[in-house]
Image 1: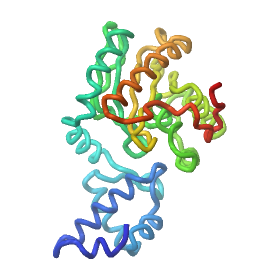
Image 2 (image 1 turned 60 degrees about the vertical axis):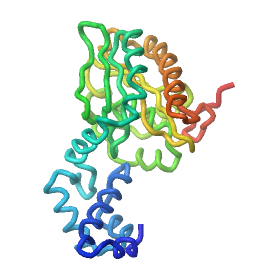
Image 3 (image 1 turned 30 degrees about the horizontal axis):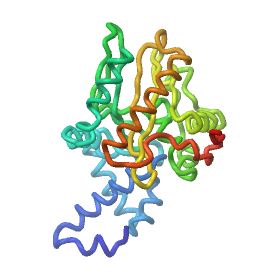
Image 4 (image 1 turned 180 degrees about the horizontal axis):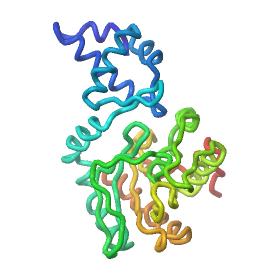
Length: 274
């Protein structure tokens, strides 16, 4: 992302292009981006970057957490609206319906949004009491099954960068210890699915599997979630096997290759399957 590309913008649009590129740079930083890092990446002065960030923050497109900047709720709203007609949703819909019907739990399709997972679509199960979340809702990656499945599939450097970031405890069960969180991601990489047990919200548990693109990069995740009283560790692992098959089917529908957490990836400390 060079300054030359910004300067080649049509006359009168340089400020707009700079703001868009800055927004993209913030989005690309999983743990959040500092002012100095953004200025260096975009070859802009710190005062210029600060002014643009202030404007983006005033519109809810960027939010400040200490000295770092992340995407704001305004971007999520825009993204959810743009993705409402996404082909990804159309291709996943029947899979979500099948998963919800067979398990009785809520099935979701989620994609990464900064350090969060965004619910792109969901189908509720047949149980009277179940998990219900609005499409467009974002949850922190570290406390969700979908987020952990996604993180477990990232290149080791990106995963390590996320682990170094601050993770807020949402419940007493939320994993905030680096070593424990690293071990959890290694287990997810080994199993091919990730679990969350009351880490996001008391009484709620879920299991998820990631699907990947042609180059092996993680793209999104499928999950099944509901009340913890129905979803103990044994049942979650059973549902995880069902989700792996759904992830593979999702990949075939998209014409992609690898569609679940790669069991051969031992960079997270996982043991290869024999």
